[in-house]
Amino acid sequence: MKKYFIAAYSILCIGMANVNAQISVIHNFNDTLGRYPIGSLTLSGNRLFGMTSQGGAKDSGCIFSINKNGSGYKDICDFNGKNGAHPIADLVVSGNTLYGMTFEGGANQYGCIFSIDTNGSGYKDLHDFNTSPVYILRPL
Image (cartoon, rainbow, N blue to C red; front, side, top):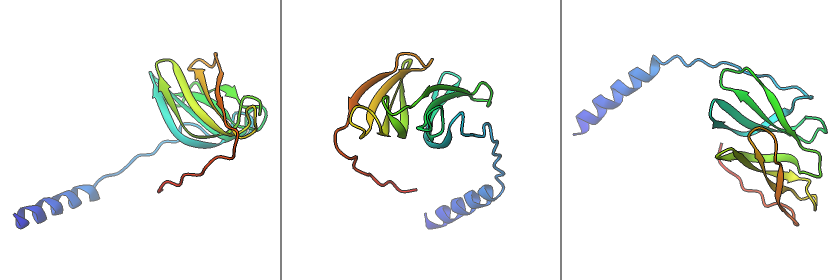
């Protein structure tokens, strides 16, 4: 049994040595359309959705969408303090609605939980935090 494991492991390692990963940059951020992307991208249909922690119209971050091939970048919502500021974590999609959180802003300036339609309409502040956020560290 041990011999078979060693043989299988050796074949796996040899196969991995021949993998040539291809990375393609599909968008470069700037101040106007957001900067410092944060969290993971969320896929809905053929569009990817994400957030930047800064940049946008009020330098408080934004929510964006982009086609999987890198075309059609669109800033769908700019955070302005009142509707939240400096988003954190990942967006979650359910149907045509995105859900996320901000680190600051909202009614109490301690961040909020929000929802927004994938077309950029229908922004709703679902919850305003009233104390400082608790940091959760996750491994890289």
